[in-house]
Image (cartoon, rainbow, N blue to C red):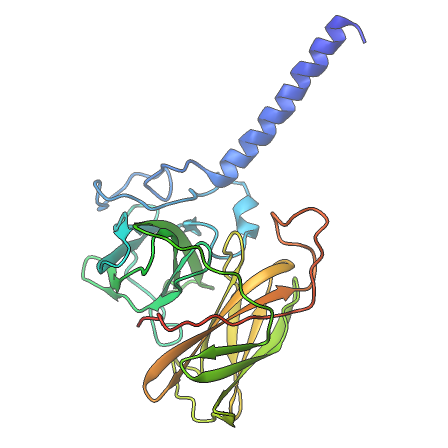
Length: 324
């Protein structure tokens, strides 16, 4: 190949690479954008930080539309804007945030889901320190909830809500840094049984990539089945499922169960490892049991090359730090 030809090929390769990078940039957007879009803000607090980790995709770019819930701070014209910029381990703080539209104004019309206008989940990125909080909203559209992180680390804040008139809900997420001392979460052992606050919880069912599958949880104490589970958030239990690595948030729907068994349906977007946080209420106290499961199917993005998913094998982790 002569010199002019080599130069032409090199320039062409640069153009292709630049085009691919531009496409990724439009899909992800700038990380320091403090508005959910390029529209002029009306009524927004100009001093408030956004907490936005992913800006909206450019018009006509469908990349973000196919992402699982919980991977964007901006979606469908709504943005999660954290007003609390950081916290310190062991210290109580008010976790404050807004859900704002493209004009910067806070969302004021919410449709109740599971007896709440908005569900707030906070967990460290290594999936330690899970908390399901119940924030309150003031007249200015600011949500707040007391929050204390036991240890330092990078925490992910999920806001699960449905605007009035929307065909479906949204799960937006942003990062909250917590300073202080940190101990890495130990790996979970492979088992289908979890122990929490004197209860034994056994998992039935499995996850499958790209399909809706049944999951159930049987609760017992001292070897005796517990069939007196109390209603919690409009159902017999609540389940949060997160994909390990990127913490994608799965769609989970409660189903009617009988006796000591609480049933759900969950849909895993890909194969790979997932963490399940099952919450149930007994004698006025909410307990949270944790499992680790493998969804059959293709490996999740970021999984090591050549890794093969295995059969579903959950594992327990005490969840005594659960807050409400």
